[in-house]
Image (cartoon, rainbow, N blue to C red):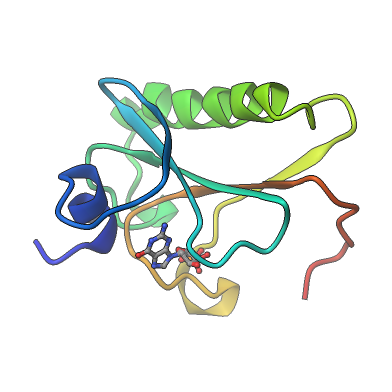
Length: 113
Ligand code: 5GP
Ligand code: ZN
């Protein structure tokens, strides 16, 4: 499958990896939008949130809890951070392997553009 993030997971494309376990990989975004901009991805390929099945619930939980744990490590846990899944074109999804953006380290505006 021609998927950029599967290639990162398989080490066919280099990335600045910040966390790895059996189910989850987290790495720094190549084009960071905040002092912390980490992508947290499942190792199993899932294209979009629209493709989630009930059996994926534990995986999604792991992504969210891992993002919070990385925020804690970075010292942005208490001050606040943002977690975002973009889905399909209106949200600007460009890589079709689900990824939770963890953004923080600066004040973030709401609503997003
Ligand atoms: P999306 O727009 O799909 O929600 O987010 C895709 C993200 O992947 C973007 O923030 C983009 O900067 C990041 N990205 C795209 N290509 C690469 C890459 O090769 N390596 C890394 N680390 N991030 C990437
Ligand atoms: Zn993939």
